[in-house]
Length: 155
Image (cartoon, rainbow, N blue to C red):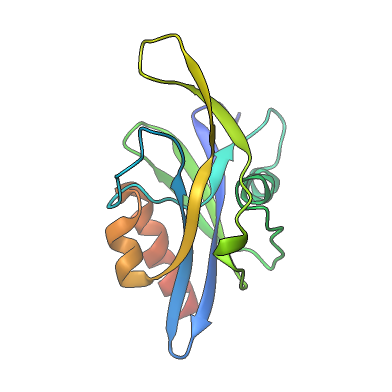
């Protein structure tokens, strides 16, 4: 299957706290997302380069967006399709990291819309660990299936 710009890949970092699982989600940077909370958070993810293996893309994107280099083993979570039609390939991995050490790459976006003025924003402006229940409330609605898949694989 040929990969297109309509595909991305990402990683879901999880950790165990007593008898509970927590997952790391990132909040997108920029003025469009300021003040948006529920449904705005996401797994760190991004585009797959031509010829790039999706898992390698997920590792690269996670590192670029967080400043943290993930290590496996990686648990395949399959794919989901977001409302925009974009397919997201996802894996999970267990580990720990301090979200306060977030260092995200920058991107440019037009702001205000249709102004032809470009501004530089971080891909992620913050990251945090959440319980599965809280993550379900905050994550992009299409990505919520990934949380259930992780819980099923860890059961």
